[in-house]
Image 1 (cartoon, rainbow, N blue to C red):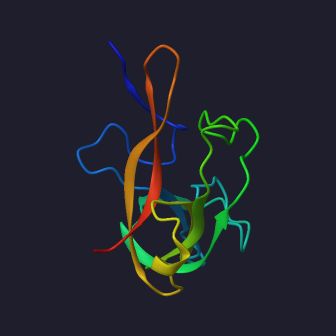
Image 2 (image 1 turned 180 degrees about the vertical axis):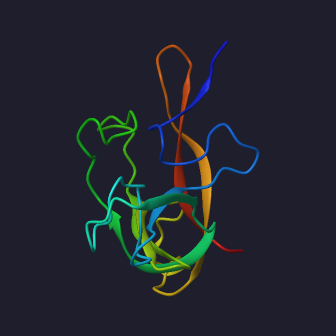
Length: 141
C-alpha cells in the first residue's frame, strides 16, 4: 500500500483535509516569512509564531523553466519526459512571497498580478509507490 507524504516536513499542514502552507510571523516587528523560521529575517528576534498562510494570492513574477533541474529538485523527469514548467512567486496577503511551481506553463495564460490559488498535488512517485506531495500555484478559474 502506498502513502502520500509531504515533500518536506513543516512546509505545510499534512495530512489535512485542506492543507495550508506554514509560515512564521515575528511577534516583535510583524514580518512574515516562508518557510517558517525560528527567528525573524528582518529584526533577528526569536519570538516568532508559526501560522497557516492564506491559500490565495497574486502572481508577483514568473518564468518558464526550460531545462530539467538537477537532483534533488527534479521530480523524476528524464531528458525524454521533461516538459518545461512555470515557476513563480505568489504574493500572499500579510506580506509574504512564496516561490513555487505553477500548474500552468503557457506564457499566454500567465500575467503578473493574476489571482492564484495554492494547491497540493503529487510532485513525484517513488519506486515503492509512495506519492510525494508538494504545493503548486494554480490560476483562479
